Length: 109
Image (cartoon, rainbow, N blue to C red; front, top):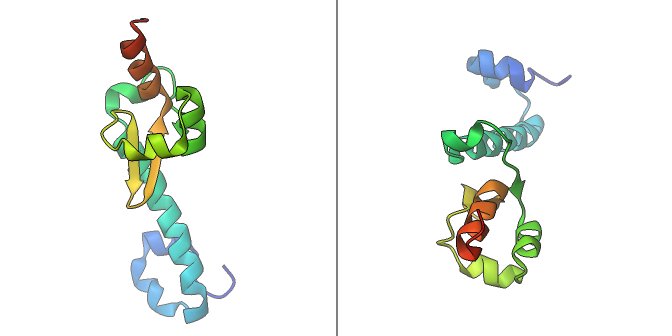
């Protein structure tokens, strides 16, 4: 970042944030929020699911399509076991968890 230290420099030496011009701070905060969302998503998937086949996080449209339901139906069911909450208001759906849910519901293994 030409106007001050970059995010990677700030992660190593947070004190350098005092050097930042005020106008670049919002962009850095956006980068930090994106990084936090990615890291929270990694923590939200149980370890047993992180080995073997990679899990894919689906958005509401993708998950609703796989289930054959509407977006509203899916959003109203907050107790579904394949929901991954990244942050307040940011929800994704585990594709592997969704497949297990469907298998249990349909009796397929």
